[in-house]
Length: 618
Image (tube, helix red, strand yellow):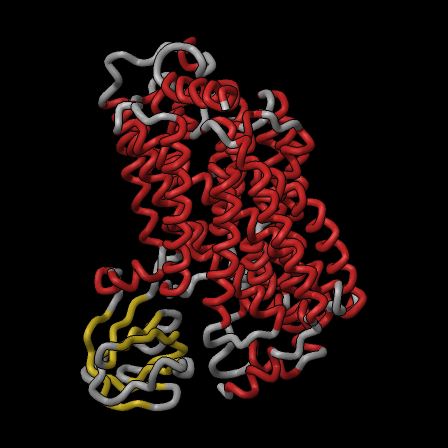
């Protein structure tokens, strides 16, 4: 790929010094908010749940602000760019499921009624302290792994829309700058600063989403958008069930489960329910938020579709870079590059500020969530609840920084071939496959036992098998795989292998993993004869040579791994509970009682009261 042509094409953006000024002012406001609310974060209750004071309107705004992060905009636009209007089924399912959860109060109503601070705290009240600690470990592990690419993908938006070079120091520099700003005001203000910045984001982003969509329609033409998708993709661009759409019924079932998880199981969404002023407020909050869960997918999908149409009809240089033959640019850059060309100066700064707002609001919520889980549900219980309120807040702040450093590292080193949304679904499954069993079973089945809960949490770890790097490491064990064969001839888009005896086209759709010295790369197979394998053109890492070794495997879709893991975990939970029931199961009245009574969980109230006294003394 011609680097000069890439730089020339990507630098044609309308982003100006005025836009940089708009973005800088917004970032300054966010930091000031963190400094102003620091003095109010004196207890874990105020630091983690904003004192449980969120009403319906503010709750809707902050939930929308968190769930509509820049990572959501980016991975949704990527799905729209590759899947067309067929991707809209994901948004529809998310909106419907969230409304049903709000209408019925399924899971979230009871959790808020119990007044727990975190989901693992519920594990302790229902299944015991060991389950809380193990559940906290699984939650933190899956959650931190899940957000590992947030920083990189969000920074890619900034690089793309401003016209910075795709390669070189620009991306790491943006990652470090944005992470530093997020850490400053999250460490200082906790959930108070999160809620306030989420509200600002809700206002700015709502304006930006609608205005940008209107400009895209005016630029491309409403009928032209549909006609181009029909011409480029055909029926698969509209129907997710047909062959070639890249989805299918199995994927749609997985998305229905993801809809449940994203609003009723995922801790950052549940944190809003736990911060609501009453259980009834939770139900109203979720029913109204169902619209935002629908829109947060629909509009970015539409932007991705518009980027595809723009490249095909008005930007032949970008069409060649993103959709042409040979090596292509990462399609995550498609949407921001598209916006950089169609939005006028000034407005592009407002939209960029809104997207950075979305980026920061998601990061602060996730950083606060995972760090508080480690403090409240792993470290404090292991220490016998001897940590003071100040000690817990201090540790939480330290962990926020540590997790921030990790996501910077992970974003720079991770190499996977799955779409970002599919990566998030698989990594999230490490936590939520066990959590689904424990929450549903623990809240609605008296026979659920601590043994079944512990086994379910451990079983959920098998979801990591859906990740590309994990399958790459285990490729020799995947059925139908081939390992360590020698390459005897190299072509531009083919290799000849020694001793091959493959059935014609039997390897098509799989991946060829080739090792040259200490380096490696993967290429998709497009055809094969008994000993000749046709490939997509080699990437930019290196060109193989005769004598290199290759192995072959056809990865198992993360969707299938996820569904199998959920089913496996539920079976393990039920069998374990029936085989080893609890000798002294909890009494229903104890579970339903608020956490400020006696029994497990009381230590959280003790430290909260202590902190409130310290705050009043100050």
